[in-house]
Length: 380
Image 1 (cartoon, rainbow, N blue to C red):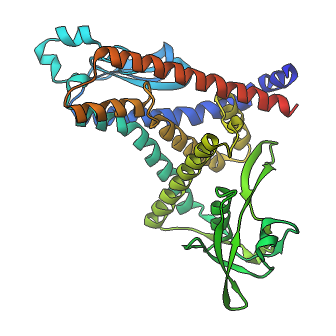
Image 2 (cartoon, rainbow, N blue to C red; image 1 turned 60 degrees about the vertical axis):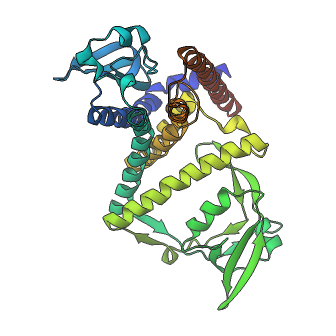
């Protein structure tokens, strides 16, 4: 294990630069979402920080916001006027003694609807960033499309058991039209153990097949293991079967939205799978694995790195919407309760919630980091 960690450390620059590039973009746009909506709502922003801890460099803008780059590059924060901490917990003493002219710009004295909009803007900005990145790739480079034609069926596979034959053209899965082999892969990959109704064209006649994708472990070119659903179908590798499709800007934005939704759907199904015992939690990764993946993907080129940036942006947005105090979703949960009750929760309740949330976030980080270490050690 020590040798594996040492090897990772020896290539730290290879991993660190792409990791910081990806994480800085994702964190900046997340916090920018909070910042812009706060400004629109008339909230004074005391600080906008990329990273935590001591400041490396910074400056004050004309509205008094301190823009900071800090030493610990594992996130960031926007500190609103009246906040007690970077987690945006209220400073009750400061709010109670705040001069009247400042109260209109204090975050915690704004209507609950505005506070909710400001908090939700961070994750929404992450999703919008991913849509724009995907759309830019689809509009400029496009994507390579292979028809959903079955070229080969693996013996003793789920596809063989379902009755697939070479030459079948997959037209729909559970009523969803299929226009490319990748469309079929997306649905199958997130559906292990689930019965799928698949319509194929066989010699000009529609045939309905019932298949249950098997949960399989596959290894990528970098040695990382992934668990996905597989049918056991291979597509044609003939060059004349592959076409490059570029999209107009509106179509690219729609494709980017669908791509973003697919990542959200896959993430949700994975988390549900952990809860019901269908998936293992060892696939959860932390900062070490993200850094490792950034370095690996950077070797494939800038476009691949931007694709990873989009996926990580979705993950950060999704994670922050979890109803856990300390996260944006926890704040939104408190605001929902406040809106229903007609008054805020007590200071003690909020304080307990933040303590519990901090404990949960720290435990998740420790668990994910342990997974990272075990994953690296297992490949030594």
